[in-house]
Length: 241
Image (cartoon, rainbow, N blue to C red; front, side, top):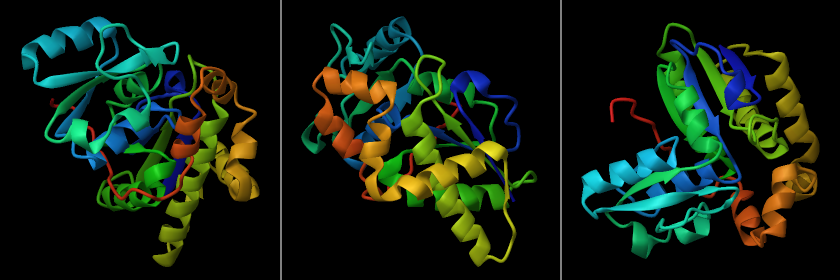
């Protein structure tokens, strides 16, 4: 059983036969997980604003537009990229069309994978369990964690979350008495998480994207997104849609 980590969506190689977990802690994958947990019918990630607007027209008013550029809500959209906006009363039975600077690009970059799951701190254990089931039933037996990063650069928050998910995968694999094979970066991310697991916010406060969100007044978003294992919803990306 192999576990590998990609530091940014731009670093992703061919993922054929692999199970991918896409991570964008601050905040796209936290938004997707929250929206579906709160009753959204589906979330459709798209890379561009124009594509989101065109797709929304096809829904004829029955979909919500969500997303950001530069970490702020896109003009004319219904929602931004704050998971706290995706409340149950808004999500029930709705489709959400989402475009973000990093997370939705990372999902598209992972489309060669056999399975694509959406992960974050909120659902870390649940996504690890589901990924393991998928991977063990595939020929490659490999889980690839794809960190979105920030505008093509490494992001500390995504790496820490990858470390938590790697740790959960390792623990589950060891229960099956199968030795896991970690890539160098998977090992490093796990060690990063284990060293700082008791105060993740202190670690992630050094991240550039953390500082940007804090300056924009999104500290409540950060606190929400750093909660561990509070949601058992595991979004699965359907490439056919």
